[in-house]
Length: 212
Image (cartoon, rainbow, N blue to C red; front, top):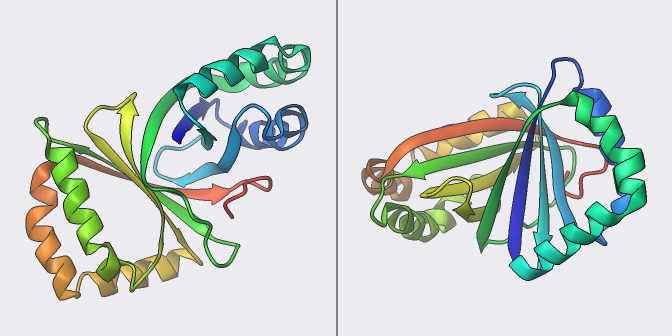
């Protein structure tokens, strides 16, 4: 599987209009016939005026084929794109290979945290992923990961991971608890030195998001 994470930066005050268009017109036209929608979110803390949506495809060939078919759909060009083009400032795309494919949380009503880390060049991202996956059983004692990816294109040397929490307070409690875990303390001696940048964005799921 290949995962595509699309980040749209919007004009201030238009986030609601974007989500409404995506949850109604876009979903009616696309369904899951042009790639499967994995999740759709708006940013709450971090970069503002953004929506993020993730799609999955069997492989790169299927992505190319389905996106080409979508572009030829007359409803897409006449009904949906005119709604959103005036709202957009920029569009960014990450193509992701799953290390841990996305798994829906056990309950809904969550806030999500998207973390993207840029590693040093020379294979550091693979070393970080190996160390991180090794410590995940200890980390998941405090909260469950939703998905983990290695970025293939858009941002080289990057790992992305997605988490869900019942609330921001629950997130703070989980992160405070994990910092006391001996296994995590050992990981912190190895993982962070491999990285150049760390970013975190708090997301709220849209009404039509499969991941809630």
